[in-house]
Image (cartoon, rainbow, N blue to C red; front, side, top):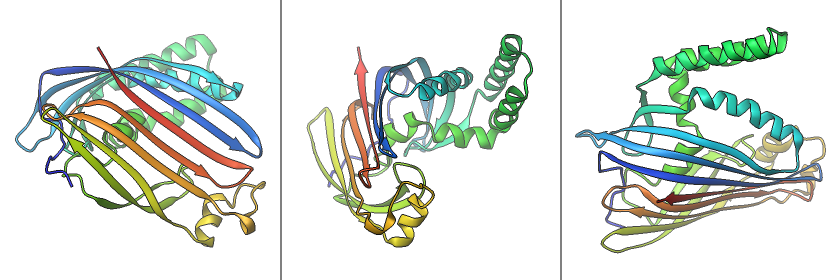
Length: 277
């Protein structure tokens, strides 16, 4: 167990990150590999007495580098349009990385209205476009919905990943979404760490995954190509994080979630965060 409590601790600093998301999905026997790369800036604007940080996250660029699925590429174009609205987020997070408040919500609302105008001028006002607006209107107009959406963004989920706001334990029980986000799954994380005066390195591995027939039915029962009777899924969670002790900011990190259920169904996602100079 480390005696170091990890949290963002130094204001008025900036880090630039490259984030690679590598996906390997097998569904119904059809394989699709994807690689998405994002560049972003993290500005720490201030720290209060409760160790809450005011931060600005600026997404500079997102690119689909590789995909074997044209539909995924088309969906990514739509997703990138939405990401323009939240390209610049100013928010307050607690020491665990949980989003408490969106500061620039009026700016985000303005960008949403601008995006709607641009899409109407390009595409016209079709039924599909109206449905698109209706689905996302609540997201960008209600503060609580937007706060939850930002907190669920991959950056916040992977960057903080339950490691912040406390001393690192030897073992920790967790319950999170499975890789396909069809159910919650309980498991234990086992930690190993070492540190020097400047850096702390945290490695962890998931084991003891708790599943039964009811869990399998809820998780995969809606998939017609899956045979639950003979299913023996294998799960793997692995992480390796290097964090700067003076600031609480990541120098580099790798996180892997692998859910291998059968010859017909698998999803492996690898996240790599690299600090850029």
